[in-house]
Length: 507
Image 1 (cartoon, rainbow, N blue to C red):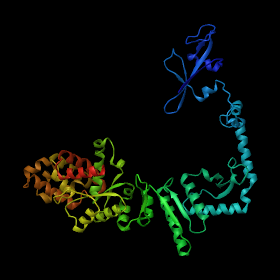
Image 2 (cartoon, helix red, strand yellow; image 1 turned 60 degrees about the horizontal axis):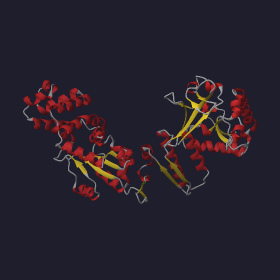
Image 3 (cartoon, rainbow, N blue to C red; image 1 turned 135 degrees about the vertical axis):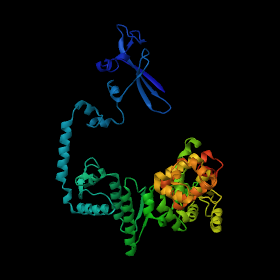
């Protein structure tokens, strides 16, 4: 939509060069608009209103002799002197922002100062703190709020807050040291409101909290949940109705504090839109996951990794995958990598599957799965990604690495674990001179009694026995080398296993 209007009888402000003087056109006596005004023509401006597919209006002044149009601001439009009678006319009868009276007045600092004094006088003369019932309620509210973890600067008291409900009980608000409590921080407001509402229910309260972490630091999240549970325990011990607390959260801190026994996973199926709530059948494995990696529970697809090396390495390697998937991280697919805490990997995977998650397992193959574990995973349709050939991650890396990549692995281990420690242990295991061990790996083959494959196998054995890579941080730092090895040796067990995990996470 486009509407144009040509306006005459322009004010001096509109005709000034600082405003729209360059856009002045001429209105000829015969009723014709000329871009170049002649003597005797009336100065006019052409205003254009455009509304495009976004439905956002654009006000502009234009002239055919100037290529660029000039956008009109609200202040510019006011210079045209438009007077309008519409549904919001009453606002012009007060000195509010943007009203005609406010424009007529100009500087009203004196009025503002007097209003502040009048407001203070009204608050002082009301003496609401002398009303016993109000003060009793305010003091009780302060105790409830503090117990829930709200920050209290001084003491709660009733105070007058004009403009909120007029001169009625609605204009009485809770204040903290003279400051309205509604102006406190978001977390304090939420906790104080929750505490006051809960206190008004004598027993058996149903407490609903949407995203309890909103506005709260981690320690206050823990404190609030702890207090809610303590209240339930007190009610139970006093043989009173305990009530129910339902929290939703995106915070791993809240999950960890609530615990596995309190966990329900809510899902809505599509397109049927049937909502189900699932509780862990056995909370122990889920409890272990909540200790080591609770944020995984917010994902939809969870790759449970057996050890700390694998968790760190996978979290690092996943950063190389987005360019292979139109720039999309696997997390945008709802996928996450979780720590299976070694021997609990299978039970954690089974527990997550029972809760409705898509689950897979990533593990070394040096210790085969028991028949029962393999059968349970197969029954749950949980895929297992492992290197095969009785390989742990150290053997999978070294066996697939070329000489340059082995050197990178050695240098990284020395950087993380210490040059002396690495060299001393390799010297003892390989029967090579210390000077050779400290030199380039390219020369080891020539001076060693072992061939290349045997040499790599022995080095990997030392690394595995000493657990030099058994750390999530070190595993993540290992990822660029691991990805380089997998990329240059695509037929290796390492590359095949990482490829399978990638395909599953992006499925």
